Length: 110
Image (tube, rainbow, N blue to C red):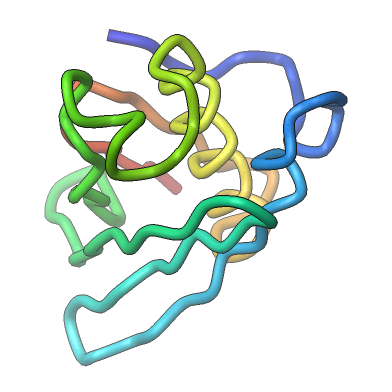
């Protein structure tokens, strides 16, 4: 499991995926997050959570299919997950937000 990291989204250099934008489609209690970079594009699902968690985000390609499905090297998968988590916090939650990753699903807390 990985959790919050002091590295902020946008503090990276080098890989094209770091220039990606996220767009959000709200569909009631869930929706879609689209990751669009210069050389990669994929969609994730999100849904409202319960308890302390605000949102669950899933649909990240499995590690074995990561590079094929995203065009991003497999060893950068955790960095991409971190990028998505930090961008969602910045765009939708605010500075008090935090996140966890269990290898399949991001959980966003407010």
